[in-house]
Length: 429
Image 1 (cartoon, rainbow, N blue to C red):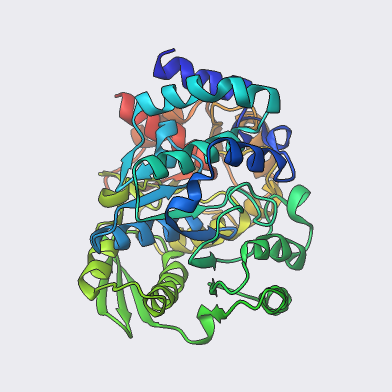
Image 2 (cartoon, helix red, strand yellow; image 1 turned 90 degrees about the vertical axis):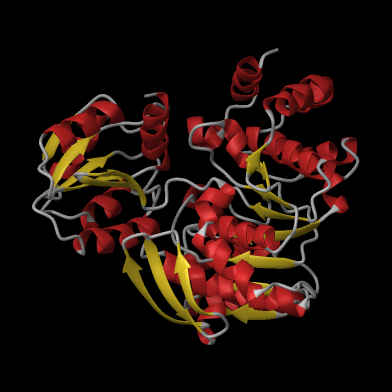
């Protein structure tokens, strides 16, 4: 099979959650344990850091990987979903796994895994763990897919567990309350393993403390002893003043990065206490060059300068709250928003907080879960959000750009799949 044939095979034999939603979800670790045993427990060959959370785990994972790479480590990085190419999920020192490896892995092991009927994420996780072992990485930063307790990444024995935050998302699987969701995320906390909690509320704090006590794990609440003193936007990202490292320039520009950065700083202190000799220079370089070092995309990413056009993959109420704050801070003649969502999110809650002074270009991503643009337009009108609908992201952005002056601001988002379609379109052109 060619690489394209292999990816099509993966998508067809085990459709990803991003394409079909809940139908792709498989509860329990039986398949993961079977795959892991078949492959010889590859994750035992390198050290790991485990990252969970509702929002921010991608930015946190990529930044930690960039810092460790700048510090001289050979670093594996496993994240999801991908935006343009499947191989974005599996990287070593920022370089995606080769097409040949993906093809060879499937051809070599499909006679074993086909009878198991694993989920797409179970199969992809097994592939990533095997690739990192083959590449002899020093350490791998592993991001959970959804939840934590029953997430198929939860077979690793990490050096450090990180939970960025908790907000309502995937409630049909993780629970309807913040405490229930926190309970699932807290499942990654292992016996005696330090755990850093980025943000906790009164409702979730006790859940994390209870889990940590049960497994005798040291727990650090990053917000209780903030190592970040101040943060302010600058033209190329964020400018931070920190207690351990002084001034840091962060390449990632979203308002949400302030909380992520404080979490990362706490995690770095834990790693240093565990014996990692992380230098100040590697920390500063990692923050400054995270996108170029790791290939991270879709986080308040500048697409064009005239008019200024930015995309962001935030897609739930927790992520959208930061985006609306940042949109409100833009100084522009007209705010134009290219917007789409998937049908299984809390669309009403998101629409209720979106800016009413913007011109909207409603659209839909090229996946089955996408809410039809015309339907989204109708729902948005109930919340005072007005605009036209377009069949795809490229046409919506073209319309927004054509109607803009140089002093306008265009935002593209609402779903990571809207951003994926945007970046794929730009990449193709």
